[in-house]
View 1 (cartoon, rainbow, N blue to C red):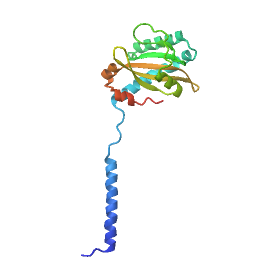
View 2: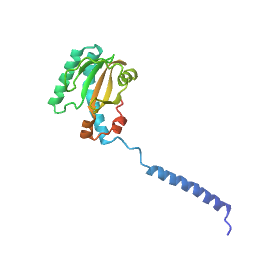
View 3: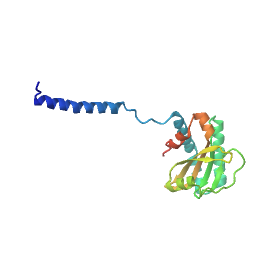
View 4: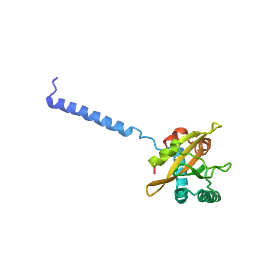
Length: 188
């Protein structure tokens, strides 16, 4: 049985069209990249809320390198957060533009003016004017997730707001894994 040339073209065109249709359906059925997990979104919101409540009030103290003013601001802000039933669940440190500690609201003994100017996370956050995350290990082998947030005024970094979260606390409260911490987008 002979097939006419028009039928061959139709059959050939149908095959190409069919392949394109199958490819389009496969692309539509392919799952999209997963969005942020509930844990990483909860962590992101916690960091952004801390930045929102602290950055503006600490700007002058950091720019003028005033440890007492920075300490009072941290004390007052932490007290208000505690009274409202939403205390900060992280250590908070304010560094001047040289990486020297101005004030800290970390549980424990009073802090000294420590020099963090050679820490990569500090130099990167200041130089690139972006939020930087890292994991630090303490002497007891516990880990902290650290977020360094530049305090900027008119395009110039005047200091850093550093938030230190206990790894196990974040895992217990939000279920945050190390991979989620590393991948969370804390963009401006």
